[in-house]
Length: 197
Image 1 (tube, rainbow, N blue to C red):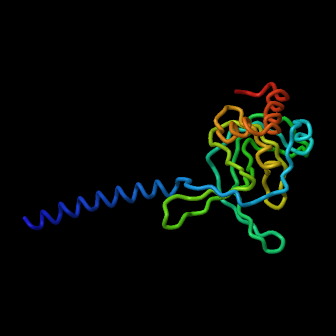
Image 2: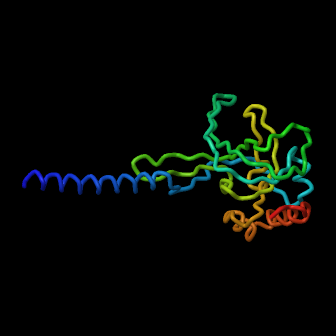
Image 3: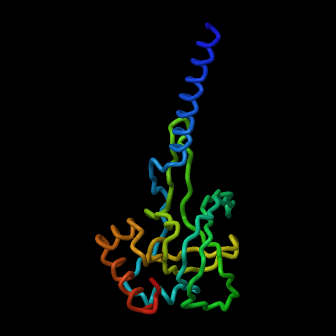
């Protein structure tokens, strides 16, 4: 009888600890904080034509879930961490360098995650309030090639990405509060009239 009680108590403990572990594992993947501690000399635009001139590739894309963290050491031994994401090209509006493009290309996003340690979750660290592209969403991206990183980077941080399917809450906030960014979004919708929805 005593051994049955021990087995029952051990089973209950295993279930409780297993449940706590799975809840903690779920929390470890959740973004619980944001830091915008990197500042660029970001160019702001209110003219879609100038933004287009300053980039070598303009594409309409669907964002995939494939993303990896990258680190490089630049001049002066500065360690830079960023994310590299795959996007699937739907349309090419400009390809100034006439590069051969695969259906899926890698793009650089200026953010990364930092584990919170013993506190569950992770912190998103980004440049200039940049928010990551939303998975399974559609964007027009204004890109330039990075030879060093062998991938395209989004020009002018968030000015170089325009969400087309209203799934990006950060863009909605920018649109409502930043007159220059609002003109960029309206310029994209006007200039690229044949955008798919």
